[in-house]
Length: 189
Image (cartoon, rainbow, N blue to C red; front, side, top):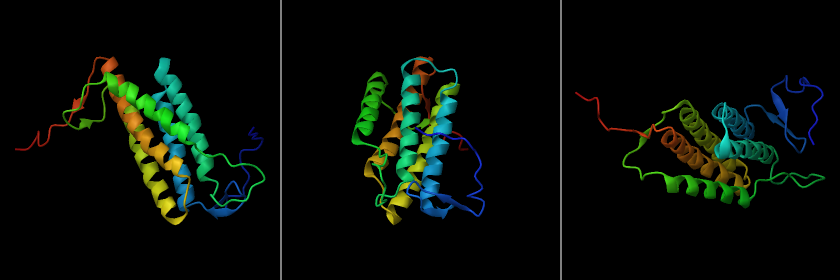
């Protein structure tokens, strides 16, 4: 269990931070950028949870916990020598997301166009979180090119953006709002 008794340590004042294995890296290191984007995604999902209830709420809570797991995974180099097994995302977490996506997608009409992010507030928050997930994925791919990372984490973040997309569509449909369709060239003269 994590126990935080002191919030500031001053150990990062020189622009470095510690990884799980105790090694130190600059705060602009690709690894820090990756787990920082995952942290930002977690906060964006927190907005989508405001006043939420039901199945979607419990799914989003699970996802937020998974994102903390992913952050710990990213903060632990694959070749780290630890006295304990590192926390790593697993294929079962990806499979769970796929089941959620399939369940929501089965209820939705097929898309006839790309959709504009928006609709009711919760859907808009989910669309925003989707864009943050895509950025986190790009940061993870950049990291993976330099320092291999757990591939289950890469699959998870890719699936998560898909989940957030169909969850936003589900929320809009449930609110009677429907999708906001992109109309190419709509305002051309």
